Image 1 (cartoon, rainbow, N blue to C red):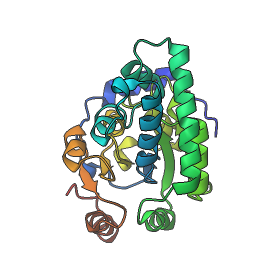
Image 2 (cartoon, rainbow, N blue to C red):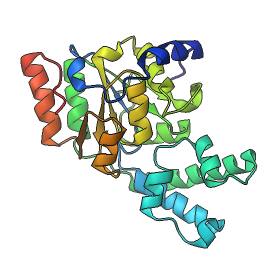
Image 3 (cartoon, rainbow, N blue to C red):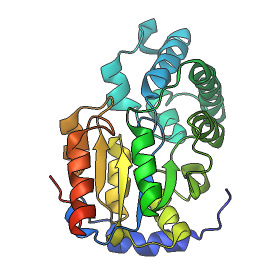
Length: 260
């Protein structure tokens, strides 16, 4: 889904919304749309990214040849765009060589995902809820197109999303708000009536920067880390009673979703 978008639109809206950190879910009535990150939000893919990075970094002697642990992955890799990771992980490499490493890592990830990918528990239920209410929806990701298309296809969500926004097609990736601003523009909805499901610090900051509250998905990242990043609510999965209490109250009372 190739969408036209002007970077100046991002710049103008960023000036308005970038200070909206910790935006509250209580401000979004009536609800028009829900935006979803992909990795770690639709599916539990972070362990597969971790395995791919761990093995490939060890092969090149990173960290004196010792494998990275999950804490290092969470703090330094998870949620970041590949171009940023080139400078984080391989600062002494030429950019082209570092990007080739990232391309090879993504290919390994796709091989692992084709065998092991699982949706986040309750995903089908929340997708049905969104469809039944006729809400607009988009997937917004820092992942490359090949990854995003594979994951959405494996989850059988090709017909669910009206729009797919790739950070690589925006002026700047998450944690900047550009990808989420592009999704709002494509769906023609207001950030005042939209919220986001996200699992990473960078994604939550991007959502808040675009003027929207975020529901943090604590699949792998610690709950407090997501709250500190600006999440209005943190859930374990889409079956979490906290989520459904909020969604049902919104429908029954026709009020905005409470923040807690």
